[in-house]
Length: 185
Figure 1 (cartoon, rainbow, N blue to C red):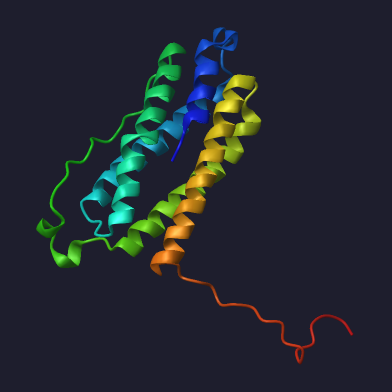
Figure 2 (figure 1 turned 120 degrees about the horizontal axis):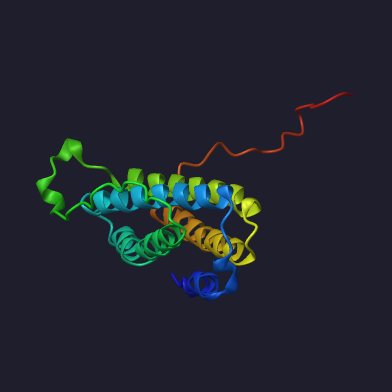
């Protein structure tokens, strides 16, 4: 997935004059909180790489852990350091192992992995929708807006993968029943 728009937004922030203005408390806490989330997601996805069997899901996890997540960590850490904010503790990265070395009953299934990824994307979208209105720096607001767009693209990709692979648990379908009377008559 292309995340060049996000990179461009970060470049505008880090090279712009707004970086000279202090961040407000909401912006600092939002960056710090999102960094905690992204650090956790990186380790979680590294763990899933040891369990995943499906080649498309493995490719997605490899792409996300080697590209956008590492880029976000680097950029957000840079912003916090520049502003004299202590970085949150990050969990240690997970080594890769052969899936066969994990006992059968201890393995996480591909369906469970994709559901956890979808849940993380939903959580990220919720956090970002709370952060964007807090930003008073236009360039920083643009960074989080581009990140929101990227997460929406990942949401669509993961939803399509869930449907195509049969991993989507569909809620019951609603059919309009003409014999059923609803509401006041």
